[in-house]
Image (cartoon, rainbow, N blue to C red; front, side, top):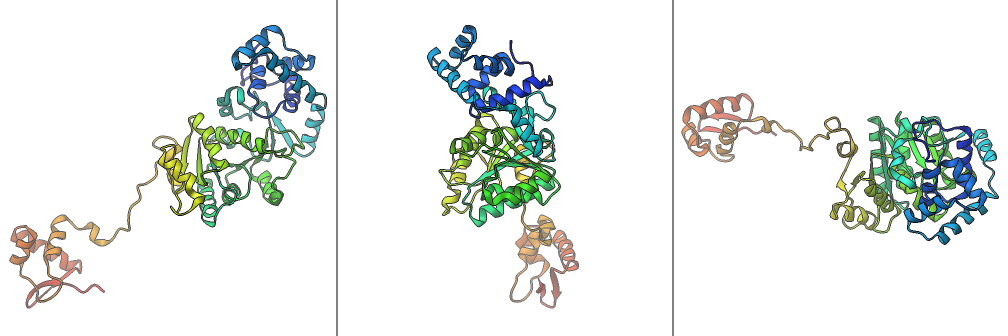
Amino acid sequence: MTESSAAVPPSDEARLARAALMRAGESGDPLLGRLIEVCGPVEALAQIREGELTAEISRRLAHDRGRTLRDLQAKVTGWRTRLLAADPERDLLVGRERGARLVVPGDIEWPSQLDDLGAGRPTGLWVEGEADLRFSCLRSVAIVGARAATPYGVHVASEMGAELGQEGWTVVSGGAYGVDSAAHRGALTTEAPTVAVLACGTDYCYPSGHHDLFAVIRERGVLISESPPGAHPTRSRFLIRNRLIAALSRGTVVAEAAVRSGALNTVNHALALHRHIGAVPGPVTSESSAGCHALLRQGKAQCVTNAAEVLDLIGAIGADLAPEPKGTVIPLDSLSPEARAVLDAIPSRGPGAGPATIAVAAGIDIQTALSRLGALAAAGYVQHGRQGWRLRDRR
């Protein structure tokens, strides 16, 4: 029996089974995800607890994932061992006591774009916060970058987060030091929610210095994690959670990143999901922006310098176009071509020039020259003296 579509509300039994399976396997395990796809969470849990999959499902999974039956059985044994210490009822109770909810496929709050991850989609998500996760992510942008961000990177991320929030877009990031926290804080200066995707349980504050930041995010947005309560962060969990940052948002912006940066891992996930990528250029002498420059040079990202350009990249066609940047408009810009030619033909030094001389130098007839000279005089650009026309001193 194949798992029902995400549009069907999950039963309490299915929710409890998913809570148990989140303890059994590591986040993003595609084999476990495929097992749930094939037979549903309740049956998947039952077979793992038995310690052996049915022959039909074993052959199917081994064929799908290119594994031998022996390798598959070893995985099942590992899941079963971890289940022995799992207490899904307690996980749900602990979550409720601290205001966390387990959102699973089929729930109204489940962001359907996570289904793009296929077998790698989360088994469920622990969510803490006042905002609705699905609604918050309908119009969302991921901003990622270096933990050891420079003042430039922090400024860019903060400004972009605030500008996007002012336009009603949600900022998604990882809650880390540097670019992540700057983007969250920028978004929190607006009315828009922000989403922090953690690599540990939502009840575990990492980094510890973000206790106050996470408290505000709970009030104005959401903290989410596919790790169960009490789970500590690990290097692999940071890398695995990056796929959620990429999948939840319409596009990912790299505000600042070195060549070797975890942010580029998020970019790779976004590229695999066919999401838009933007990169903010930095000083060519800065190693902290070398990763952004590489993305631009390789054609993997488009150059973005502000929120308007980000929305032009990822927003709705025709609705979020960024205005073309223009220089400062000055009065001379409004002059006609003939008036410009006349103005250029008038000497800036020495005695003035007569209309005929000006007309010849401007390449126009005498009547047109006289007409343009009158208009330029009225506008204060030129003046007529005893020796002819000359430029007016406009200092």
